Image 1 (cartoon, rainbow, N blue to C red):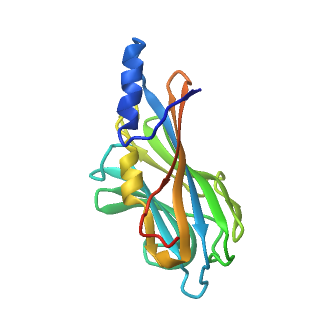
Image 2: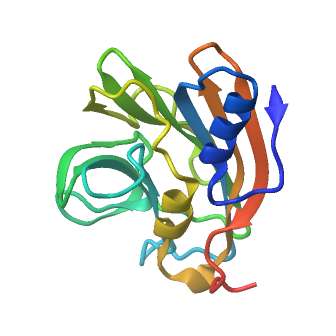
Length: 210
């Protein structure tokens, strides 16, 4: 496994340059983002805080991309508590699935961790939440409940840009109840099974309360 540091917004182009120096093409087929949410004092009745995560395999939000909502559902209408994954196609939600945990966050000073994973295969890009851990919900993800797929004729995921996840994700309600939302590390896996890892960490919202 190769480790690459320091972090830059153009991480994937850096990987491709590395490949060129080794005279082989990198075809990325899996991307993993590891996230951590530190909650200060949640409020059950108002279902706060609420977090919305975004991840795209195209490098923009013009076509298919994915959303993960924490402590609420937003489609087809707002529902407090729980989690939801969504596949967006442009400005429309094409698919949405909810996790089995439906309660609201209710533990003071708790830390949630999870992995957001995109994989390419069988004519589709699949987005899934797994390895989730929290005090309020226990373990979550990895059972298929938080998984959606987008049809794709792409041959790789090389258009992925970490900047989309970093800039578009954040706390969309009650940011004063959050300590931090942090991208801990990134992993790229190519078609030959080579793993490239970048240890961040990056707090994605500088406006969060300390």
